[in-house]
Image (cartoon, rainbow, N blue to C red; front, side, top):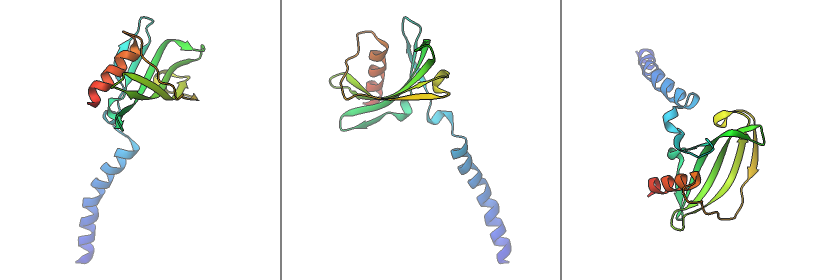
Length: 139
């Protein structure tokens, strides 16, 4: 009698474990998806992962993915940048940068440390559009 109850419990547990494990082994793209924000005059495309925006102590932290029409240094067609933004003063700091040998942040990469200097986006630039969209979503 007890053995039958354990088998029934295991049969109920297997589908739950399968769903749980597949969530971690094959993450859904809806949990972290790059959304196109703008394309500049050179044809470079800029994306943001809005699901990963974080706000802490009045600052907004977010990831951008940049796809370049002409690869950086002739060999890096994309980059991913972790940014600290200040929506009140409208400025930003790149905290870390990764340049990729493949498109859309794929392939081998070179990591570059950001800096501690605040930057102000140029009017009507891709960076201004990104910071605007991130600040709007973080309020």
